[in-house]
Length: 426
Image 1 (cartoon, helix red, strand yellow):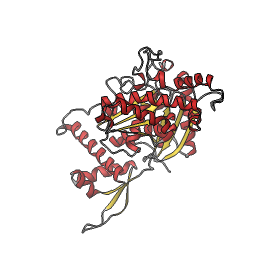
Image 2 (cartoon, rainbow, N blue to C red; image 1 turned 45 degrees about the vertical axis):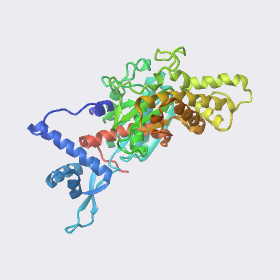
Image 3 (spheres, helix red, strand yellow; image 1 turned 90 degrees about the horizontal axis):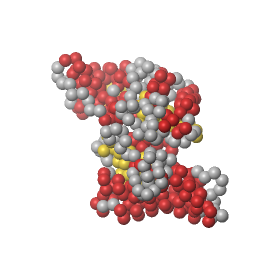
Image 4 (tube, rainbow, N blue to C red; image 1 turned 180 degrees about the vertical axis):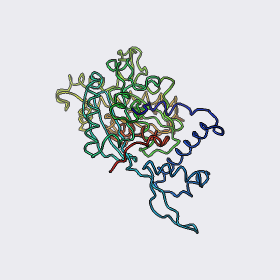
């Protein structure tokens, strides 16, 4: 079984403080740091010469040559073509091989499982999704994940040895001391299940797991057109409300992995009891179940409403976009209530960007206009005036892509993850 970890370990734990100058351990650490630096530069540049790598990093050409030789052995890098001459022989450009391996991203929501298989540039090669009551069916949910992964790889003519790593997004905080397990307070039926161990044993690949909002934030930073260094908050509006924070380029999880549980902030101390045991949580007002219950209550006085049969968030949004007054009232209520939470977030953290994701955001201006009006009325002028608030452009695959990105980010930091894997043949 390959070494397995949560992404929290990799992002939040500082590197050992052992000296680099003396001993085998120090030399190995230096080599690993330099390898990670070159690999990221090659990934970013796509094509670059050894001389340019030496100039941009300050490393000697002999050091560059030794590390590049090691990277060539992984299949990640190949010698592409001659570059432009600067007065001598034409340099041979090195190119990053985006299709050397596959990444698997699993989005395990409260009511669905989705699996994406991508190359090393997040280009989707396979996508599959299926509804399931994840909260109450751990065995069936794990079986569905493995079936969707197996079927996706089979469609590509690939096997597990060509998978670089697997990232899993979950609807629960992830405790760094128990990285493969879900929080029993939120998902009690998952108490005895370790997702990392299950998938790691099945696929013999590194597995990383994190909260869905954190993973959504990671996807926005990598694939949502964000520049490095931007402080960003991603808010996922789904069965519950979660937030992921990127501060100075790193996911902020808090001491026990519970930072960003925006859905469990209290808006009404006299409100209904939440599944977490608290009262008046944001989730009890604008979580999916709460909004659908509000819509159902509104139908008593709206016999001609477009909302018919079993209500879902998709049906609610469709009816609102079609002009249904009951649905529009529910969406407007959601926008105003979410706006209170976003305003508090701006006053506390003042991020550069707030991105909203989840099915409800498809309502567009019907949701965002009341949200922005509430934020404007309840935030400090200096905070709201400098923060962009927008809807994610990554669509339904965004969280799954973020999950796959956990494996990519880990591998770019430590190229040894690429060794002993089988090259993909895309």
